[in-house]
Length: 311
Image 1: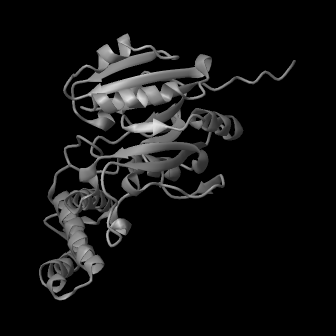
Image 2: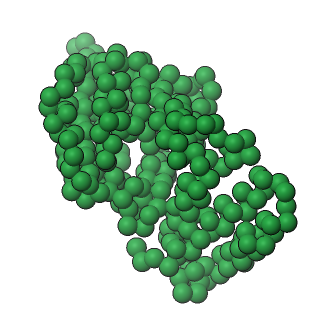
């Protein structure tokens, strides 16, 4: 009998929350892509306050069909899990509602999926569409890749860390579903206030033995509003990253080596960072070092919150 290859189905999921104008631009960008219509499914899932997303989807004319899903709870992880629960045996590409896509991004994912198949997940480049002045040189190293961009070069390579950005990565539906899906304690709308939703999911996939592949030709550009290039925004971001770090450490700590849920090893680091933040930073003229002291302590404050939060 001839060897008949079953072509993979691609499901694009776009979670959206209170960003109607940006979502419209994202869908218009998707409409300009080289599409594999018979092998493509697009689902937009709105979470939180219900706006005009459903109307836009039903009235717009695209070269592809768009399905609408709604979750009343304003929690991105919960919204993604709801969509995943009704998807079976599909390769899922996650895009955010504030990106524009390279015309060949879907082709890049499709070719990689055909090449590698099960046992892998993938992520691509992310450029920065910064709305406002450039980030000062002394601060650029502290900003996340979602602001300054993500690029591992021009070669397709395997990576062993959860480095892909949540606005541009792909996986096989059953792989993540078998591991419990997305953790609702992480990401936008989480009760803990932690970031790192996609990092947590990718870590689970890596720990389960899957391999990650970087795709240089799977590129999108992430819209970055002016306020996200400010130091105040960065302070809040570092605090949320600290919450995530604390939640991870909390899962691994030994109860006997903690006081009121706070690990003993944490106390010294917290006091040192507080000393640098509130005393030492005033006696240096190095702007980069001043910023580091402030951000390190904000990170530790986030960790402290996580240790004291019941999850």
